[in-house]
Each structure stands twice: as structure tokens, then as C-alpha cells.
Image (cartoon, rainbow, N blue to C red; front, top):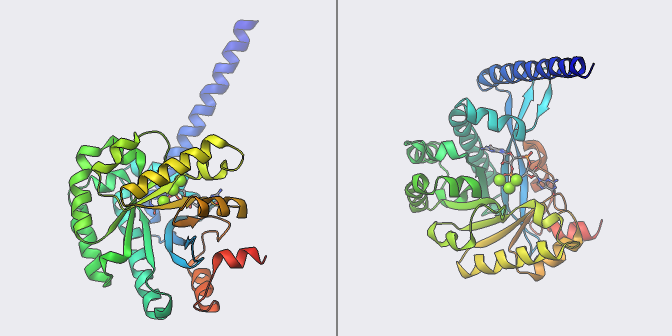
Length: 292
Ligand code: C2E
Ligand code: MG
Ligand code: MG
Ligand code: MG
């Protein structure tokens, strides 16, 4: 009887696997068509100066409006896009759209400038031989000055492909474009590795920030990362700040910037534009929140 049960379980397992494979194939085929069907859009999450509460810039975050499934999270489809090589044209679309948007905002809100636009770059994109040429082309085409653009590369990509990426990173820096390490602290890199890369900004992973006030170890990690970053001349962005307690601690630790639901969720283009038009020059995210 046990044997029969085992067999039944295998049958169920196989069926589940089969179902999963079908779904993945469907996702891949939908994804291949989504770009020309214009199903992608960008949302923009404010990055805020913790000292002044002022808007410092935005991180562009891709969204996919699937005709049947509705909004699909980038956490689900970006890895698939990487697997099937679609990340290269998709990433190019993101870069162009983000640069274009910042140019439009520069014209519309000169009094809020300079703002920076941060764009996530997948490992496969940087390893493309013509990646730097592609960025240069986009800057020329959109008219954006490279010094307002920041590229985010995850710590794992940086470490895994250190040899392959360092040359591209140096070329990018020579265009005045800034480089951030995303999701920093996840344990891939030893801290001593950092000085080898031409990095301007460390983004501390959300997991450390969210556990900070209840977990002494997370607090210590943030303190250590911030001190080291400053020693190396880098700025620090705390990801995923959600409470005023976290804000207070991050300020005390000398983190320059914050990004998180405390200040704002990612906003669609219209909401981000509305935020900047309805708030005068003294737009203060930290103040806004304390008065809530
Ligand atoms: P990420 O680059 O680390 O982006 C930050 C993520 O944290 C975003 O999720 C954002 O919505 C979320 N977040 C921000 N503040 C908070 C907070 O206070 N609490 C919580 N719980 N979450 C917060 P999102 O938009 O779902 O993106 C997930 C990941 O997908 C990104 O992580 C990034 O790795 C990737 N991604 C998004 N857009 C792109 C893109 O255009 N290109 C590439 N290659 N990857 C992208
Ligand atoms: Mg990011
Ligand atoms: Mg991140
Ligand atoms: Mg993340």
C-alpha cells in the first residue's frame, strides 16, 4: 500500500512539474511579445536626502501589465528575461524610457533639479560588448547629461563577474555616470573587496534595514557598512525604510539617503509628476511623514 501511495505521489509531483513547465513556457512566450505590444511601463520610487528630507532622485522600477494576469512583479519576470536573453533589449528600453522621463522632468521642474535617475542593470547587460556604446547612444538621443544617471548593479553580479565587468564599469564612470551597488550586504563580497570597483553609492539591502531596531546584529552591519563606505568616499542609501524609528537611527548613523515606503511607494509616471507639481520647492519627505 505504501508503494501505491508513493506512486500516486510521484504522479502528482510529475503533474505539478509539468504544469510548472507549461506556465514557464507560456510566460517566456508572452514575455517575448510584451515589448512590441508595449505592455511594460516604469514606476518611479523617490530617493530622499535624510538630512534635509528633500527629493534626491528616483529609482526606475519596471512593471509588466500582462493582458490576462494583470501586473506581474519584476522579481518574477526579470530572471526569466535574463534566461532567454530578452533582458538586453528590455534593459535598453528601460534605460531609454528612464532617461527620457528625467529630461521631461528637468524641463518641467527646473526648481527641483538636480535630480538623479537610478536604473537597474542586469549582469547580462553589462557583459554585452556594446553596452557602453548603447548608453552613450541613449544619452545623445535623449539629450540627458550622464552625470544625472546612476546605474545599479547587484552585489552578486559585481562579485560573480568581477573580471568581466570592471572594464565596462570604468568606461561608464568616465562618462560621469554614477555606479551603485544594489542589495549590498547579502554576504557575497567581503568588505575588503569593495575598493577595487569604481563605485559611488552603496545601497544597503532592505533586509538589514527592516530588522534594524529589533536586531542588534543588523544595526551593527549597517553601522559597519556605512563607516566603510564613507572611508572609501561612497554615499549610502538605505533601502526599504518603513518607520520613523528606522529613519532616526539611519540619520544618527550618517546614512545620506533613504528609499522606502516611509517616504513613498513606487509611483506611476502621472503620480510622480503630480507629487512634484503639488509640492513646492521645500518638499520635505521626512517632515511630511512626521505630520501624518
Ligand atoms: P531593487 O532594485 O532592490 O528595488 C527595490 C525593490 O524594493 C522594489 O521592488 C521596491 O518596490 C521595493 N521596496 C522599496 N521600498 C520598500 C519598502 O519600504 N518595503 C518593501 N517591502 N519593499 C520596498 P520591485 O519594484 O518589485 O522590484 C524588485 C526587483 O526587481 C528590484 O529590486 C530589481 O532587482 C528588479 N528590477 C526592477 N526593475 C528592474 C529593471 O528595470 N531592470 C532590472 N534588471 N531589474 C529590475
Ligand atoms: Mg535597485
Ligand atoms: Mg535594491
Ligand atoms: Mg532588492
